[in-house]
Amino acid sequence: MSQVEPIRFPPDYPEVLEYIGQLVHRDLCARGVHPHIAIELALLVGESLAVEFGGTQPYIPRTLPHKLSERNRQIYGEFRGDNYAQLARKHGLTEVQIRKIVQQGIDADRRDRQSPLF
Image (cartoon, rainbow, N blue to C red; front, side):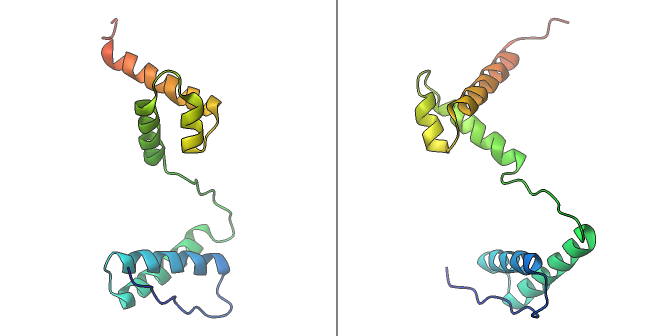
């Protein structure tokens, strides 16, 4: 993939919106969007965020819920009964977190196999 030329923002443009704009522009160009259209869309996203969230500090999670579910299914699939520590190291989590994920997988399997009582 070729290097994308960064967008030039005005000197007084908010730093966080400039950063978001650069990310949007880079990712759109990487997906084949023409650079001029990518610039327009990146600026539009920045301005929309300013209008929608201006003056606030919204929380942005590191991982989206569907990605967490995918990761948790992968961890549960890799679980062999005695590899909590190995999974914790591999996925950058604690053993307690791994045990919780494994238990959630066990509970989900049990729910899927059992028919409802009523």
